[in-house]
Image (cartoon, rainbow, N blue to C red; front, side):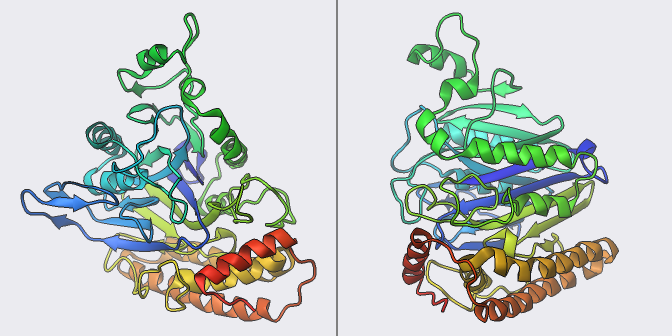
Length: 441
């Protein structure tokens, strides 16, 4: 599952637009952080998405994406024009296309590659949805998992929310701030919609005569929407955004994405996926529940800074600044896959995460103050570095994160377990570690 938010200039400390997303997926579903330059494609070319090929456009924009390793599409990303998009799984009463179609992640990457503004990206998504549909297995191991998608789309001028139910959809322009999670949120009021949205509900008997149309009420699947616990996470994001009104900045955005609610937090201490910073804990209610990657953005005119962890568990990670200048990303080694590889930053950090959660309150106390000190320094340095030095700062940030990770792994490995996690939690993670061939002892 996932959480995405956006805040417009009235909410932020410096009149920028702030965007953030956690991508929550299966614990061994490594996520690749990638840059793809702009390209001109030959006439008649096709692009092979996760399950189907579609005609390619003549030119695609440069994109920075966070991609589950096994799929073509992306959970979140940005393009060279300053457009950022994050998507969410939503569960609706409309039928799911079992095979073929475009994943929501494919739709997201296609929109980034083809759209110079948030509004244009919305138009691209709607067009692709009508032409090719959404569908196919969405899980890494769990090939039964299927869902529809919602999106937050933002650029330096505006933001939109698009929510879908099969081929149908509704969209609202963001006025102040907005958060989405794993449920439909658009109700009676919307700015744009599929022309058949209301009539289809009437034909299905979902909208009774004399009742006011409410998109979320009419189209939501109650069971999956309820047990995905999206409302709890969305409410918490809205609460934290409201508390930060007028002073929201990058540090506050990271704080939201790292939020566990009540402290001290124990990853094995709750049943449902009801925390923004998510940690998998069992195979029933919290399996596709690991925050496997995070992305934030600050957009103000031509000043566009993107912050990516490139690793799981934002609570134990550093957000690194990235700009569409120079090489954009340093060499991050081979792309991660579903098996532990210490040569990849994602899996090397996972060696830290899986040790830390064995006694998160005690081990987190070692990591968090150092994390915050380094993070604050990185944010400060983005304000003082000139444009010609930006890639060097990106490279330094990744090096700093690697050094910190090695230091923290050593520190937590030497610590005794003061108050360990429960048997179900330990058993679950032992099984995930065996699958990934990751030794944490």
